[in-house]
Length: 90
Image 1 (cartoon, rainbow, N blue to C red):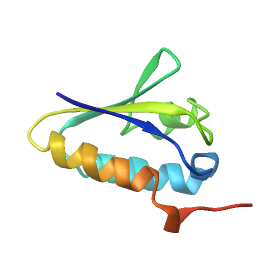
Image 2: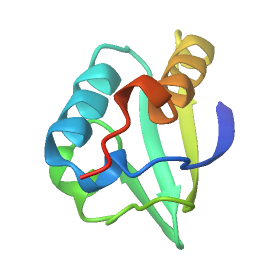
Image 3: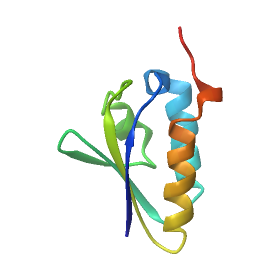
Image 4: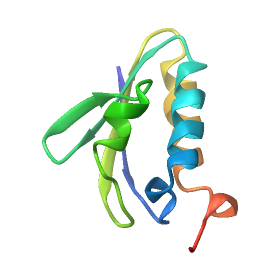
């Protein structure tokens, strides 16, 4: 299992379309992937569970992956979360 703590640096997780992109990216990996936040741990491949975390800028989350592509999944999802080119300020 690989775990990576991340501080959310932009407000993307307020946008449903961004969360959908994140979930779709998570689904593309064979590993089991979860997000831990505020004493909750949810399936990163389930949009309802991820949306219910109500993540916001400056929240600290932990992405966990277990499986054959766990390292790649965590690295790429971390990069996706804080990709400044995807920032929306509305």
